[in-house]
Length: 171
Image (cartoon, rainbow, N blue to C red; front, side):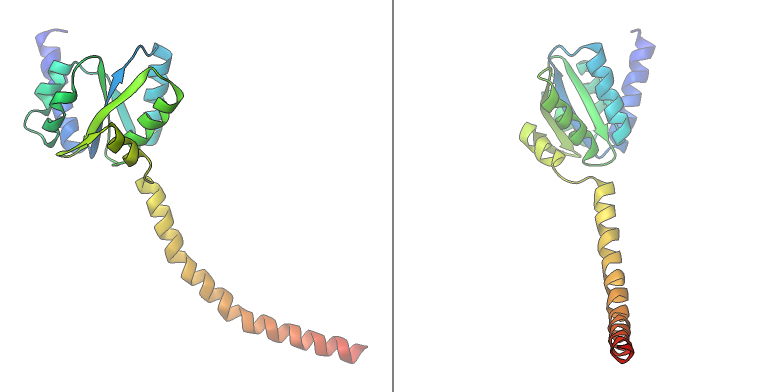
């Protein structure tokens, strides 16, 4: 990697740190190319990204951002997972870490709030923004459907009463 490529990589990472809601730092413990590709694909499907970055360049990129608290975590063979959804990156990495021992969650950050490995796992257990939106829509629709059922219930009861009288008269 020449100097221009390094400069571009730092600028791209810096832009990324300005846009994301969460960054998770993982340690690669001998993942195969296939496992790494699988993790990238799962992250992409969830709206997150997974990237191996040189620690020195990542430290330069986070300098001056909210994520500067991650500097101490960037040692050894690390990778970064990040997303604009505060839960997506943590959820993807935590789920993948359950399936293999080749990746370890080191920690992460939500803005300037540093998270340890347990904090990232706790974050991963929360519902995503899409799940929360779905629950809110369901809660908003529930009263309307209950109201419709309540208003239809008296009419249905009257119909059953009239039907019973009709069957009684017919017999």
